Image (cartoon, rainbow, N blue to C red; front, side):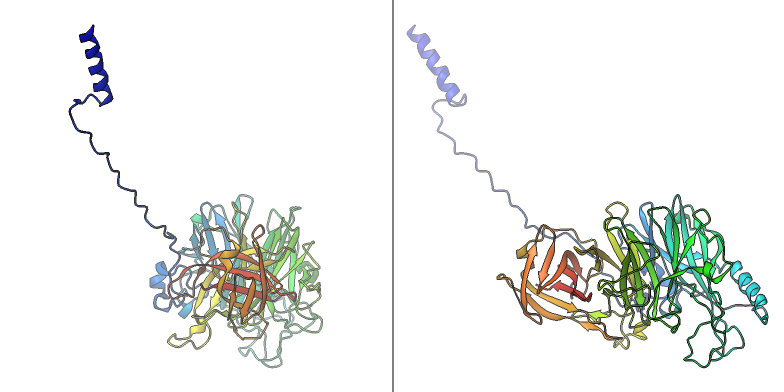
Length: 533
């Protein structure tokens, strides 16, 4: 028994020492090296393409354009791509001779692939319609054998399973003779083409929708170069199209002369049912002054949307000349034909000045700034329901080192947010698909640039430096107090409520992620801010 007890004790010792001999010394513990976690870096690499694209502006370099050479864009999504069509305009006329209505596409609204042009030639019906109308004028006029055309400002929309492209063709020849001081130029036409798939670039032309039609009030002769009393009522350019919640189809169009028209269309044909009298050409829904006394109203490029969240139609308008002063206004209505009113309650349909202004020539520090920023497209991401604003932006005149700098036209895409009382504000910085972050009060403390835009004809609105301090004070070029509601994302800065968003600092020497805010003064003037540090 004694020997057996010793045997059992030995087994226990072996088990307790991991089956090692009892005589082996204990082993030191295994040391596991600590895991080294690399520092967290921001992986976002935003767009780097230059604003001055003159070195690649030629047709031979079109695969490098991205958003270079954009003017009067219109945007619609088809499949996985957004498609952008535009006016025939480019730096150095690079697109001339290559068809009409240039277009490009993008999956992310940041990187764009130039695709070519939608039409190889101006549709033959334009010349036929023009000369048929000339023959019926009193007295009749001879046919124009080789009309000169301008192809301007298309509008693309998905309607059912098809895509409709409304497009403008302007005949630029004088009606009589060759002197524009004694004759108006010939009329403009809006046409329609349809496609089943934008990727195919196959269009079926449907002919004329509407034209600039004489109303008998004025003749087609001019009393010198400053006579702007047009012989037609509505100028048939700058089409925009909408389907109302009730299923009605409307074309909104017009430029300068007499104001903006709304024309009801047949949903099946995409055209009006008749154009027999001048009343069939539409009703005026916006103007800048009294149309009975002024046919030169300095507004154009209507763009219309319906926001189902607010229940309003929003009519965006371009004011003033397009090379520098262009600025964007917006009015709204519960009804498609108006009245459209501004943020101040003024009736824009009868000619009141439209406020708010949402875009104006501007400059942040370290950049020449942008001018001519209007004739916008307003469109929505069909999945996220986010709204966007697209337009051209021109560099200012006489930028050192850039030949004809004001002809540099870069496409701008910007996000839209909505104020608490249902007005659209446009982001101060161009869209770059910056990832969204959690924005807190602490995020806003630091140095900023702010632009409070006053309306000044052909004057660039420039930024001032301000500081938002941790004790909720505003100092620098603007003084006062600030507060932030993280639940709504609204910053109150010196009494102006602004939407705060993640953004891309396009003006920084090395572009980077930042924050911006955008809002309105009580009078409808934009207030923009960009965080610097």
